[in-house]
Image (tube, rainbow over all chains, first blue to last red; front, side, top):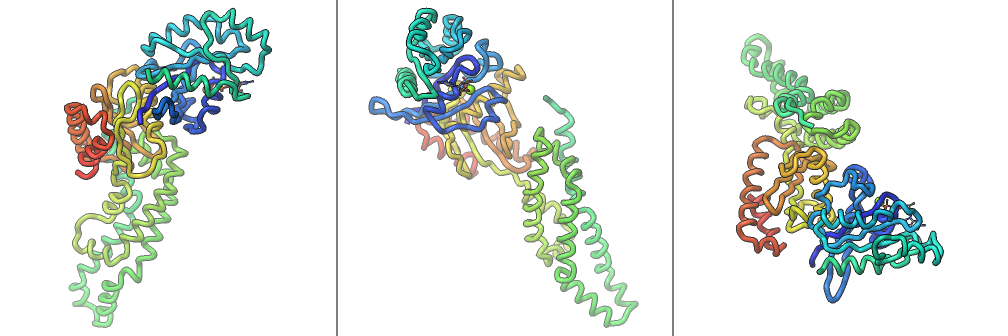
Length: 161
Length: 269
Ligand SMILES: Nc1nc2c(ncn2[C@@H]2O[C@H](COP(=O)(O)OP(=O)(O)O)[C@@H](O)[C@H]2O)c(=O)[nH]1
Ligand SMILES: [Mg+2]
């Protein structure tokens, strides 16, 4: 079976860990996270006749990548950037953030996910799509389990490219 | 953080620990032995009845005194926890005191078990009269013997597991290898020592050592007290292993083949 390292990045509190929780239930203890700023979960996904073991690095830290060692980005096959639809400050500088992540990881593409869909109305979502400086790939709710599977499926597909 | 004193004092501390655990009893043994050795002298001066008693004492020493000696050692360990922590602290590194105390409870049990086994006491007398190694050496060696528990061969950048060996049963080795990479990267970043080998990280009760070899690194988790002798042998074996893997890259894509190589070189050797 092939194993792929994939990244989840985004500001504190946007719901990265909640999304991973939805997707997998296989986790390390909290202690390690606070010390080294990463949570690693694994999940085996069947896709296009292939089994892929995803090693999901849930990278904690602020948008300035404070305390996140650069080495964490190395060797990853795909990345998902998560922001909080209900908090403007988590998506205002999204274009710069994505550039920086592409540089650090060497990836050509980063999946953009707006989370906490359940906190907003359809109209508000429509407006946000216009403000956000990049194209949003998925709008999810970890709370209501909306689109979580879809977002991770795309992540898996990209990891195989 | 670097503590240059640790290594120099290590052996010394270990001596302290030994003293702590067993000195009193050793002294008792030694004086008893001296008495026995002077039996011939004694015999000249006292009557055969006493002589018989001495023979009985010698033959049945374990029955007469075994329990008391074992008990006295147990009590000593229990009562000197602080000193044991003191003695162990530099050896075990930067583990928190609280954790060590919890460990000592387990350690005490383990020592007690070994003591119970070793002090089945005809053995003690045998050894005393041979005048060779002390029982403290025997006991401590068994309790602290270094054992390779886990080996991980990991892709340097990805943190993905390429091959491994395990004595126990860790559920998800891939995740562990990822965590190890993260811990390593974090520590290197925190101490700005990129590219350097990183050794002696504590991971639960294991002592971790990680060595970089170009595109891979090899992590080993060892339990017990790592002696310089053990460390040298491990280091030699690790170099041999890395050389073989990097010379024949098919190992990187064949986990079973690599796992066998790891076992051959590091474990069965
Ligand atoms: N309403 C709502 N709350 C969410 C959602 N996802 C996460 N949260 C909450 O947001 C907070 C931060 O989530 P967490 O997963 O820890 O964010 P992280 O810092 O990015 O890992 C928690 O209180 C979550 O319960 C969501 O989809 N909807
Ligand atoms: Mg989190």
